[in-house]
Length: 296
Image (cartoon, rainbow, N blue to C red; front, side, top):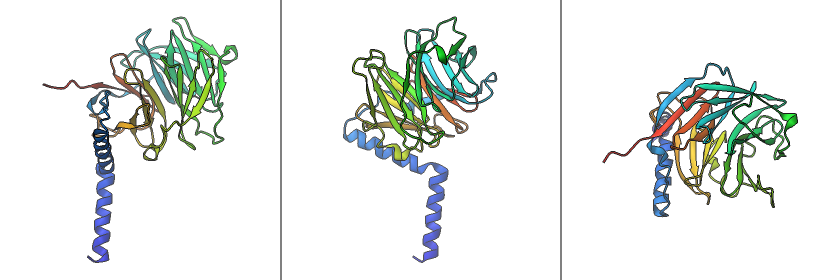
């Protein structure tokens, strides 16, 4: 085979990979076979999800929609923006119920419901975590009135800091993801009890991240006790168990999950009590995905 033919074949294969997501398909298949051999199962079955609300524009939010969480007490969603800095309570269909003003914060990127109307948010610029209650009468939250503030500086790169936060109530663990340099999982144990509080990094959960360009969000699923890592750059969700094993992943691109278009900049992820999956994307797009029931 001459050099010219070899180059044409190589270019053709490259184009096929780029335009058909063959690399993702092959990776998923290899990962699935590997888990079958190890008898590792995924209870979430992410591949069975289909989009139910696609790219719904939340018109009252103009820009910078960056995080979302589900509150079981109200059966509603709470989304956060980083500029202007606000929290929005939403219906499960992405309709705004109210706005809560954040005063004194710098770059609010992630939000997580903890329990009993208690929430946590992360501020990327300050590299801080704040916890506070939100009740039905809350209209604003002033940073200068907060007492539970944690500072966790792990890098000095501007705009590559904390991007997402989620909570494991049973074990009292707060999970935080750092976007880049490093793409890092941070665990704050005994966040609420404050008894022998411990902070750890990585724990083997980021060994797979060479396949993810960044971390833009995280969600802890209390039913499976697995973590869902969201990547904006890779347009992907990866499901990781407590041992650091990658159980599954799904693409957030056209043709996957019934999507008609790529999700442009996925920034936040959560699930509700019925296992409906929600994603928010900058500047102001809302998505929901429901698991399809298997036909007998």
